[in-house]
Every structure is written in C-alpha cells, then in structure tokens.
Image (tube, rainbow, N blue to C red; front, side, top):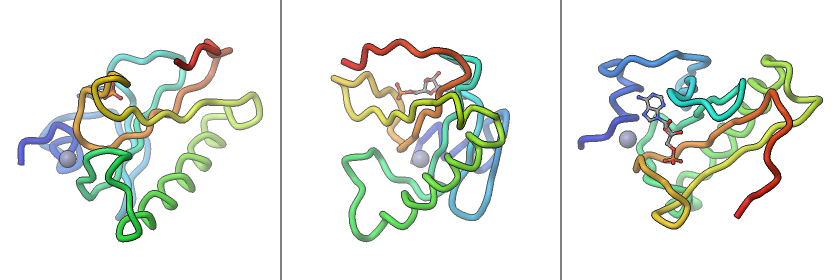
Length: 113
Ligand code: AMP
Ligand code: ZN
C-alpha cells in the first residue's frame, strides 16, 4: 500500500515526532495553521473517521487520551484547542490515513463550515 502516513510511521518518510507508542504516532503538521498544529494518527492503517467501528474504536479512544496528554504538555489545555478529522472531498481531506489535527496556541477562527 502506498500511504504517506504509513511511510511516516515506518520512518521511511521524515517527520518531526512529538509522541509515539505502540498504537499512535504524533508529529508536527508540515504546513501549520496555528502555533501548535500536530497530527495524531493510528499506527494501524484506518482510512478515515468513516471507517471507525467496534473492531478498531479502542485505538480511537487511546488517540484521544494521547491528544489530551499532548495538549497538556504543550500548555494549550487551559486556553483551549481544536481537534479535527476531515473525511472525504467535501471536508478537504487529502491523505487517506485517518489523522486528527490538534490545533491551538492562538484564538482560533470560529468558522467551522
Ligand atoms: P487533511 O486535509 O485533513 O487531509 O490534512 C492533511 C494534513 O497533512 C495537512 O494539514 C498537511 O499540511 C499535512 N501534511 C501533508 N504531508 C505532510 C508531511 N509529510 N508531514 C507532515 N504533515 C503533512
Ligand atoms: Zn496508512
């Protein structure tokens, strides 16, 4: 499978790692939208949030634990942050490996749609 984010997990493609364990990998977005812009991804290839099911949702629960931990580490948990998962063309998703954007460190644009 030719997947950019699987390549980042395996180390074939370089990334600025923030955190890693057996289940998740987190790294800086290459084109940050805010002072903190981290992508948190499952190590297992899940295509998108539309592919979350009872067989893999334990991974997603763990991802959100890691997101909370990173937000604290980055000192953005008190002021607030945003977690975004884009799905498909209408949402502008460009990479077919589920990724949660963790965005913060400034007052964010309130426009969501
Ligand atoms: P999305 O529109 O939700 O699919 O977002 C994909 C994100 O991946 C964008 O914010 C890109 O800036 C980011 N991105 C693409 N390639 C890389 C890369 N090699 N390393 C880090 N982030 C990347
Ligand atoms: Zn992948």
